[in-house]
Length: 263
Image 1 (spheres, one colour):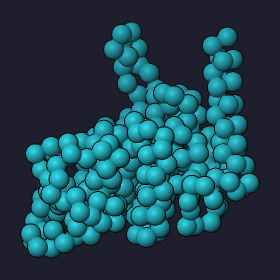
Image 2: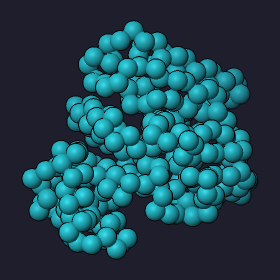
Image 3: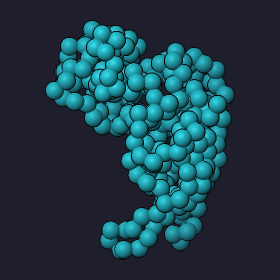
């Protein structure tokens, strides 16, 4: 079944310096099925994060429709959970308190929400850290907590906005492996924004490639690599490199188009 549907999405805004109206998102349409991991990438400034923010209900589109579970999105809601690039944790709450916060807001009884929060903390590798505070965690551990905090609420769609972009390369690879392991265990529906081609191919079932601004869907690339996946084995597959090269070529064509336009 379809979890997320985007139809004829456009977004215009007024340039603060020139006063001109600019079309950031030209005409974008796609769907994400339940239990599917879909990434979106494209040239810098193409509106990847804007698409995510519209889905989240943080930004209103100029035209087009966004539906989650068949219901039109008109603002933020509990059917969508967002993992941000910045950790956005409550510094005064413990790891357990952060993980259980959404359940508390829903009125879930204390005993049940603690049990569920502990379950997801264990799933992301934070068992034993329940009484720690965010400042006592590394950056990678804080991002794991952000993932657990969203997953514990079991949203219809999990939105992830370049969550590993500010983390060092070694930790990023480990977090990518952790995320794919969690995905393979629980199969949440994930919409993932990234600028990293290898990351998109490693994590995803499909990759949406946007054009330059005003963006349209240039191509949707199906990633038919076997699961479960680990970084070393998966990235050494010839099929992995073919997919990554295909996406690289698509983005290269976009850059060439931009250069011709500028000339």
